[in-house]
Image 1 (cartoon, rainbow, N blue to C red):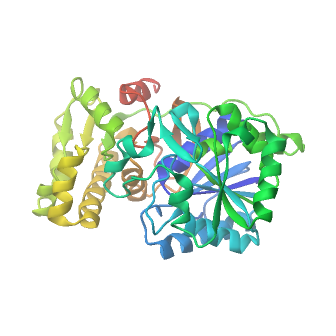
Image 2 (image 1 turned 90 degrees about the vertical axis):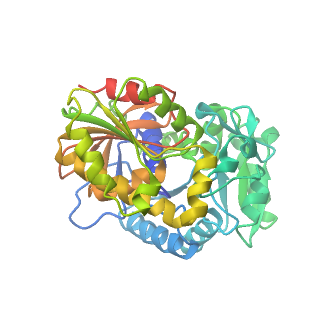
Image 3 (image 1 turned 180 degrees about the vertical axis):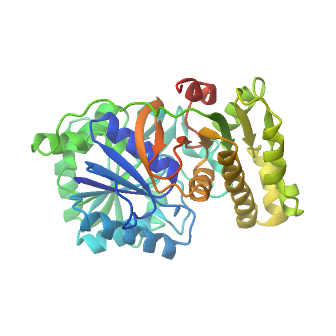
Amino acid sequence: MLLGCIADDFTGATDLANTLVKAGMNTVQSIGVPGPALDVGETDALVIALKSRINPAVDAIEESLQALAWLRENGATQIIFKYCSTFDSTDNGNIGPVADALLDVLGSDFTIACPAFPETGRSIYKGYLFVGDVLLSESGMENHPLNPMTDPNLVRVLQRQTPNKVGLVDYKTVSQGADAIRSKFHGLQADGVRHAIVDAQFDDDLMEIGRASSDLMLITGGSGIAMGLPENFRARGNLEERAAPALPSIVGRAAVIAGSCSKMTRAQVAYSKSSWPSFDISPNAIADGKDVAADVIDWVKEQDENVPVLIYSSADPADVSIVQEKYGRERAGEMVEATMGEIAKGLLDLGVRQLVVAGGETSGAVVQALDVRALRIGPEIDPGVPWTEAIGGVPIALALKSGNFGAEDFFEKSLGMLP
């Protein structure tokens, strides 16, 4: 193993693994720290998917350090801490606290933070994060039910999460290439900076940032930051050329579970409702003690097995706020996630073998409910989202989609790729 990766949610882990596969690295994604019975085979990179993004910082640190220990014991020479390209976090963490803890254990005093992913519309300029043409704070992320992002300046956001100094590598430096970027790294280190936000406008910028980061023990960012790293290993003669990954050849019923309340997932749900049978999950019904999962499975039994089914809890921010005020933010999220997990198990029993899941927390609940231990990464569906195949256990093809990723027809496009 060359590259060890720690991701703070499941869709983000798949996104990162997809980036590495596209760059020619044989990559496996594990769900949690691999156990002794899990054989992932020979792999260039391994991505450990945690469900730590919204955990208390102390828990996120503990889980991340366990993942780091496993990766180092299994030969990883460089570590990526992957978080969302919209820098999802609060003033209490978890990006800053986890990055500091990883640096401490690695004995390092400097890392970068670059969530940019231009291919999916995430760019950074003067430390400000843009989603498409608007600032992060105007992108809809200001209404995120768990981690509302109201400040687009990542230097300020990260500085509130760490007692250590946060600096900036601005675009003027980045545009001059890897040597200039590396020189800026050294200058910031000399000034006592421990975390450097790095501007990026184009994919080529990420390639140069990757080249400049070849000697860093820890790199933090979105999946785009990994684009340039495989070439570093290739230049050293450590990485062979790899064939393109194949689609999972798994046949069975198809379903979509959508739990994200992001603007794009809501649009995708609206698009697919017009052509597929759909079931709207009611948090109120769950809170009232109704067996919603059983109701959904009974409903699925009545549907045509040759037509995908859509099961969703995605709702407008105003509706989400009402539910959160009524039941509390944590309880509202947990009861829906638990129900989605139960539904996923019921779908598996009904012969569903092709499953698309929208939303990081929903994806985490689903793969844990299905007891999926690892995923083999297949070809890309849309930027940042590949098909994957479960390793071990019941064979199932999974597409785990971050809330804001994919075009409006993503659900149809993804299932249309499979046999």
